[in-house]
Length: 303
Image (cartoon, rainbow, N blue to C red; front, side, top):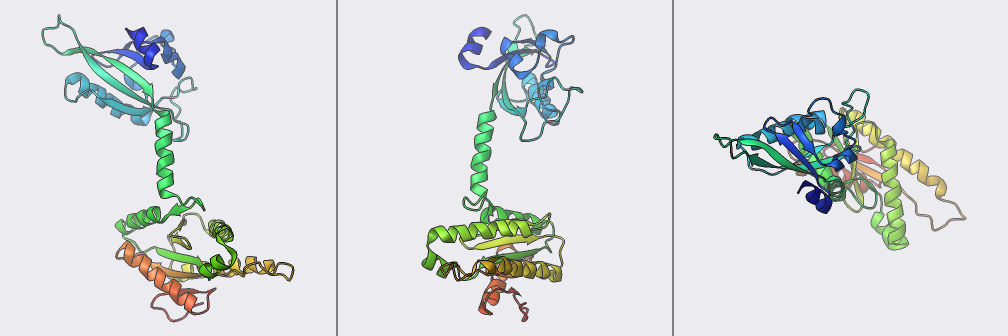
């Protein structure tokens, strides 16, 4: 039966005793890098999992064998076999994920009726994990710029608010983006947005979070900064962008768009909506002053 299951489904078949020690494994367990035949002592089922998941796997197996939990699947990253210390920790990107399902086996000669062990089916769920990760990344990433999207940025703001808030958020936008779109077309507009996104990533300091909030606005979360220092950083970003864009304006390239950006700042407090609204008001003030400026709602001066 073991051979038939192994051949048909590709699952690894494992037999464990009532304490969770492996007493039999199908031959394809060698694909994991584990040589069962060379083991001097009976390995435990938890030896198959990375150390940070071994306890949860052991609890699940123990609960199933004791009847406290219903049989079902549990996922875990596979332990790294063959390393010098026998317990090397793979990174999240390198981990191989497997799932295991247990079915208690009862010995008719045992009057207590307690399971004598369990038959386990183990299969790779790595591809499913990768697909889930890809789908998740698509839900929180802007497809054009590769930055976090508004959903991910708002989630980050909520986490900071839960921790007390006080950080600074900046909202940037390329000035006159709507006019640029109408004059030069969607392809050029996309190139401008992509370029500005990469520029903000370059200007961002370690710990800053950059996201694209919508078609033309970008958010930057500035932790561990006072409002004054955050404003100086935003002003430097605005002036640097204008300086980088200026050399493109030549007589030989009359259709090159004249680019500048503006920004609004606000403190992260109250709610996510309130924080973004205040930063948006700052952006409106900056643009009302002619663009290429930084403003804070409630502050009259715009640099």
